[in-house]
View 1 (tube, rainbow, N blue to C red):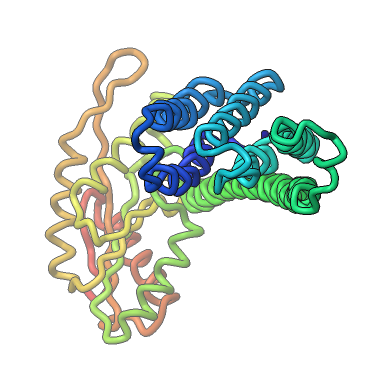
View 2 (cartoon, one colour):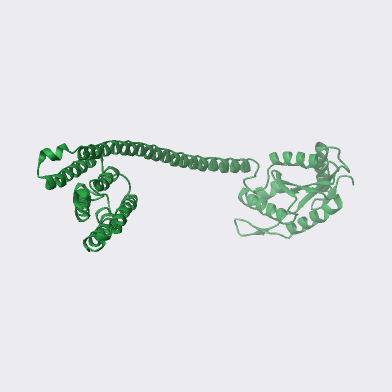
Length: 373
């Protein structure tokens, strides 16, 4: 039997329902209504084919013994049915044997169907022989021979068609299974590829971020400063872009006195102070060495002075603990330039901020100067 057990059970029940018209025809005969045998046999057929076969014998994939038992008992039921409804004079003789034959072709196989047709033919001949008592008379009955031939044709033709359909179904199921397997493999490969792509994209973003980030202070580096300033000048052609340059006073002496590790600690602390005391829209950079830069979009120089003075005072009042446990502090000098007020382009904006910073240092350090002063 081919197919899952649930489907086979349902199909067997449907086939069993096909015997109901025979029961109606038999019960419609008033002479048969008087005998209880037909009702008992009908009850046996319903219980056997409606419950025992689908839910017990065919609960799982049936073996040859279960198939033989199911078909054999149905053949016996057909014999009794014909006998109780008039023997060879019954309207069911010998066509009722077609039900077990059809069941064999659909649920078993061609060989099972041919064997069932053989037994159906033998029982048909037996009924005739039981009436006439002569083999010669039995085989002289053309109708009987036609029925027997019909049994075998049904078993052979329908059995062959069912076998071909089963083979096609098996082939279709195999192709479907292979396609599903290929689809799942392709989906899995796609997911893996997507995973690798995501990892590569993440790594690329991290590498891009590292390429524009100063490792010590975690601020943007000089490389990105050039890119960002170009971008801001291009986006805001109407101006209002200020540049603040911040430089640590006497940083070389600080390193010589307290060591480069303390100097690095100082630069990291300065980066934190600057970043926390400007707007989120402002861009903070480590311009180089001990020098920092801040781009202020949409701010005029006088507004930048307020931020610069705040940063200067916080740094002046911040102490750094040296390796020897000593707390020291530093000051910063700052220069501001403004576009388009005192600068016509990027180069002038940077050079003017540097000049303003140099002026702050020349005038005593720890102060803020604007270029156009």
